[in-house]
Amino acid sequence: MNDVRLAAISENPLDVDAHLRAVEDPAHGAVTTFIGRVRDNDHDAHTAVVGLEYSAHPDAETALRRIAQEAGDGSTSAVVAVSHRIGRLDVGDAAVIIAVASGHRAEAFDVCREVIEAIKRDLPIWKRQIESDGSTAWKGIGG
Image (cartoon, rainbow, N blue to C red; front, side):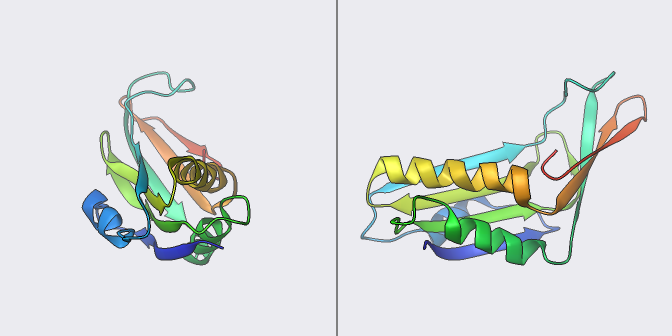
């Protein structure tokens, strides 16, 4: 089970440096990061995407911590920091930040990828996509 030092759902802007500081560990020489940002397009959008509104179930933070703890093959000893933002985000804003430290790069990459894939699949967060023409579209868990 991974050492999860940060697992947060936040209405405030996310801080990459805070995630990197959270996973600092002299035993771990590999650190990977993932930043998921709001983009200005979507294959389902008819016009430019201008923002996203994220909503979370009250248990989302508990689910996020579980996702981070369980990522990996079961023999991992990675250190994880992960946050997901909620509320209104503009194009370019960070919606998700993940930092993973481990003894070896393969493990750090694997755990980081498993965390984001599980977030997209299992985290009870929904997003409402807002387009430049004023239209909106709800996306399911992970969207």
